[in-house]
Image 1 (cartoon, helix red, strand yellow):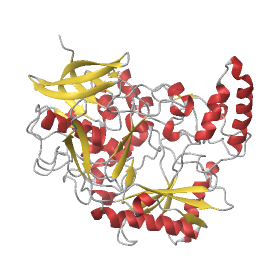
Image 2 (cartoon, helix red, strand yellow):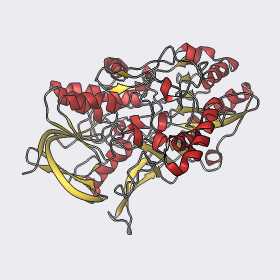
Image 3 (cartoon, one colour):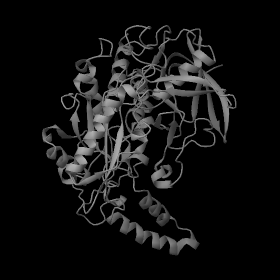
Image 4 (cartoon, helix red, strand yellow):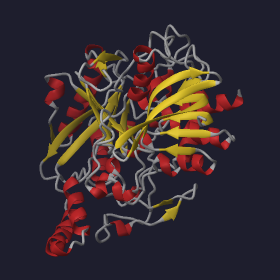
Length: 528
């Protein structure tokens, strides 16, 4: 007989982890199906120097850390694994500003209504600001830039899902050595460490200072009886008596094995692209959910992400040291140039240093000399950032939700269809360009030379780690795919709970908003 659960959650990111946690705590039988693998520290790309790529077409061959999708005018970066986007994001866990809810949302969703859920999300991920004694050179540069352009009052620290040791400093000997991290057990009994500013936030924190979802929400869900099955990709949903049949493929011994379970309720939380694609396939390819809203796939946006590298002569910026993002200048009130945007410091991992660490840790007999040399070079690399003169000015803009995700026939593909994105840059160009111009101004005013990517200036091509929309929340089926409770119009017991339902750009990192909305949906579902 088929396995049956009270709830199946598809995906384990900022939406799915919340539903798994809250439903399991309420005594429901919960199964989480995650397409990616579980990630022990030894397999993080920062440690293993492997496992980089997730291939959605052949996950049995490549089921690594990052899923990159390339569309005509947009590239999307996604995480893959137990913990979803929390594995690859830059730790920034901040509330949307109240004006983000002024339009585009169902009337039930307001900042005040979400505020207690924002607070709960922050508590679960144990957010902290970077300590004053640990300010990065990038943080100082952004603060200096805000003052230089006359907007010092707009600068602020950011809430980070990072565990800091207040006694750690850059002044100590070999500060980025993993041995300088202090081990502790978090509120869910998981072993973590404190931040050593190694800069590997996006490719796997080797000391587990990053408070990823597998260490809190998912740990609590498991403790309350939820089951998490990794390397399971959901392919189809079929209505059956008493709920839904969830068809999946699991990776076994390098191949795909089909299977299914049934459930009274299904909570889709596979991300903006993943959730939208699953429902599109159910409606347009398999025909199992034919009455989904005609607005499915519409209302997509990139949340205006943009990065402008800048080169500084004679100044140490050290972008590979410290948490990836720590401070910001907010222009989200729209009073500067009429557009809304959010400027942040950006960072990136020291890939060369990580490679040396990997070689130095090997103990192969015929590599003893190589290992000794690597250990020496590693020590030198820790003391001197190889990209010290580069400042990645980062940020988000409030772009327009005009993108459309759709399926197109792909004749030579195994499944016959591929996800496509139609995105017109014109309606969002003013907002993105306002962010770019502020990057230029901040860079020049602090002595840098901005290098705006030609992919934008010549091609209007963007890269986003924060895709939103596709299954937009709305007041009716004619306007969106789900209601304010995440319930899919026309299908009882079917929900979408992730970034796919966010109906507009919020102009800053959306992880905490997605989590707060998921907490709100869980509360209403359990109260029903």
